[in-house]
Image 1 (cartoon, rainbow, N blue to C red):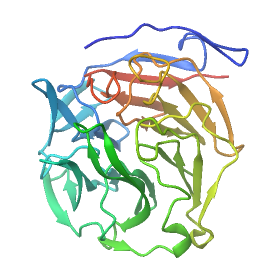
Image 2: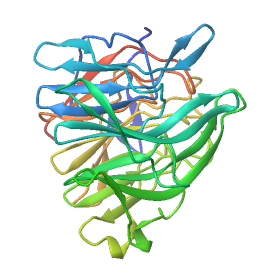
Image 3: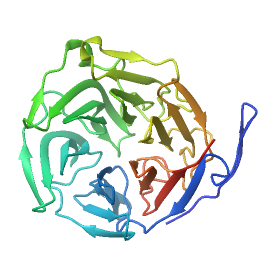
Image 4: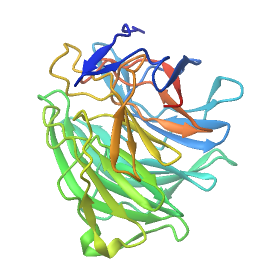
Length: 340
């Protein structure tokens, strides 16, 4: 596992200092048992969260995995749970009630990584997976922006395929679908809510209050990173998606996002043409109420292809890639927001 040095930036006359002196504190925790990236992280309770799927090193390349591991916040330890029904990278996952829902993702084929519509639910009481209705055709995708409101899971955008060995070609989508965890069925959304304002994949996702946000991401390729913020009022789906005036300060894809209070914390990402790694170290915070952004100090370990989760006012970031494309690590950091 390789660590990259911390450093300070000057941005538009605003000094971004050490992460311990501006906006919060970083701490290292027990590393994940298997280095990985392109996984999903979901909170299970106030004392645990889980990581599912992703890619792991395999010879000179990487392989899609079915590994499912749970972290105990109180004990700072990891344990394994029942493997995913199939190996999946860029999975669309969420926890609702006492279950984890895995609603498609990308699976390996000889031609590359292609979306599977297959979906499952995990019951922690029995440590078992159960099949669910597949995602409606033709909306199968991986790397969707995932939001949860009440008992419904929303999937926005994503990629229908990704060819990591053929120049990274990918099929970005704009479709939006919803799964009702109470009925166990996919539900029809009003026409205005069925498509994002533009295709996005590898975007940040957050639900603040009753609004679903899709932050940044990219459109058909690592180099096409975006700074947009799309919003959907989940109390008025017929009004459809809007584009917020407050743009992400640093356009990037593959970023991680988590909500603390009424703010969305975003971390890292890829598409950085100024660094050889291609990875961003940015930590930027979105005030959803004011539609405003502010920058904090850099990440302790800059990376992309990870998935953050907020538990107890802290943000946990397990794994990810330290080099654009590949470079999985076993790092687990926690970010504790400070006062401003």
